[in-house]
Length: 367
Image (cartoon, rainbow, N blue to C red; front, side, top):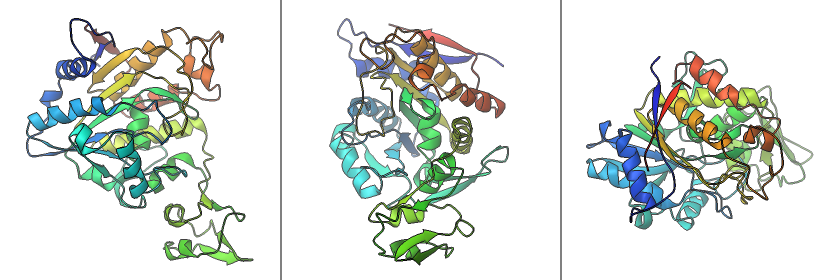
């Protein structure tokens, strides 16, 4: 297979050029204009950041991509799916409030925000993954699959379960509906915390499989009937229902790859990744710790495998940041040093096996 081309520039700005201008030049060099935008819907998949977290990407970067799509006659929107966990992005109303508060609004970016899996994370499209080892039918947010193009704009960072959060995490996990996220995260099915349950019975009204009953005044989920759709999680006003979140990390990574395959095999896609504020944990956390390495730069490619691999290599070529959680740890793998139980290599093993790209890349740089 021919080496994949990954384009790179650092965050240095000289001669009056700004970072948004450098990003624009980067994606143009990488061939973003080759995509057919005119009169087509383009989804920009991005993480809007949890309230309280300040490591998420500035909306200024998203505006660069929005402007390019519009210049080419396209209809563009920013998107993400609701979260499985309890937080400020659990439903579309809270999610939109969070996006707007963090600067992702039409006045700042020039594009509207559409939460891809609807009000409660149940608006999904079932997409077949015929060669999936763990996932045969991915549950993807409907607005993503309704789009004609997908551009992923990723904040590259650490992650407590997957090792790092890159393009595959942004697309695979990020485009999964609530049921999809539960399928990736869990080997089991949701359960009820009886100490929080108030027996309002909204969960039973949202269960299509009669899997929820009440014992001693508390909800109980019969896992023999439950299909793991996650609708009860979104319905519970007390957040008493939780996903099992018990899947092995390696299998989680492979499921994320298979969910990514469901999207990128069906929608023309282009990928951008920024290595800055590399926090040890995901932007889904309401807090962000000291970055584990210095800021590195911006990258773009049509190959998501090559892009993530280039990001890993560039990160591991840096020295650990003073005062970070890995300061003083003698490990050439910063992501393993940060989260020793993770094995991020399984991403690439599964992605190459499925033909989604190659780890053999050529890094094309400019200043």
